[in-house]
Image (cartoon, rainbow, N blue to C red; front, side, top):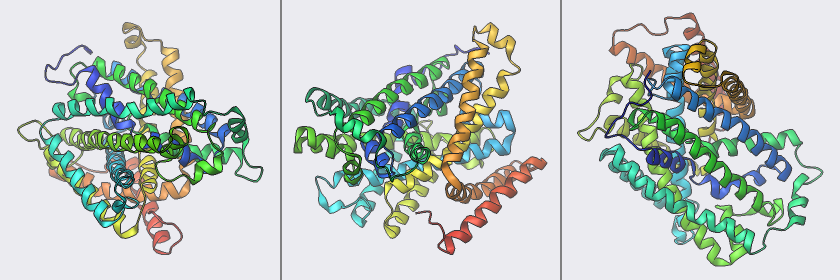
Length: 482
């Protein structure tokens, strides 16, 4: 398999890296410390959480990197890996889960975007009132228009925004360090926290949703690998993006815990980084951060508009989603997929208004939906390595090291599901269930059998059963999705 094929109209290594970084660094970096503190996690648990995240996410990224080298023909990324390893129905569910996760991420970004704008224009409130929803809708459809002009052109705009969004984060890090706002005694006081707080394990689990959310999008280059100029650039871009993003997150989290006590961090308004930088620089600090949030979320929204539309488009091209999703316009953009995706996002924005939901709710559900696709990708890499010794030798890849990454990535995927908890799994099942209808319709269009294997029927039964249970618990008020 040639890993050096060149698509002259494809995305370069730099643009692929920018898509991954741009989609990953959204609003999460500006609220990391506050969200973790609000969840009850103290410094010790946060550092352990980041250690687990670093090892786990690095292993997942190396799984993507290895799969890209070994199977550059699988251009659908997360969907292709699951399909190749475990069949079309499981592959479809991986694509469906990733798609729903991506569009929910954009719902979350749109809400936080106008919460940040509210710092300058209080009329937007918490980002979930009527004026915020109207303006968020305009932003969503503007991104739709930009991507319709062509994925390559939209990725170019994303590169500029990605550079701009990193600047306020650098200012934050430098200000805390060079203005001596980091206090060792505060950091140590926060390390183990209150005696009557959550258990250490529960604190570590409480960091998982936030750390996973912070990295959602890091595989963006893999998802759009079919549009890469060189296949070999996809893996390199993914690893480069991971290293850059992880170092930024670790520094922001660690420095924040040395500025003020955990209880004060937990009480900060969104975005918490604004309150921390205000402490260091005065009011100008909040202005810098909120401007950074606005730029960052605008870029993340564009990045996720590309990714969210590309996933069902690739799946439709490979015969699992309905043919409608595979339609493109004259610029080669996945037009039908774009309009369907953004229409669903529009529906969720309306739900936000009537339920007064916040961005944390949607990013929590988004993180839950992506855990299954992550796990399947790692398991497929592990499965593939067991039978590809000759190929590994020919490509000078270390099989033992690759197996270590595959095993750790798989274990981390299981940890993510465990940390999600029963409620998270039930709500995820409720969102996975409608996908079965889309899968059946797609197969009927092609006059192909659906749910032919016993394992497919069992999986469909489990998803529907959990979805029904979830719906019953929601209607009886025992759990709430929003």
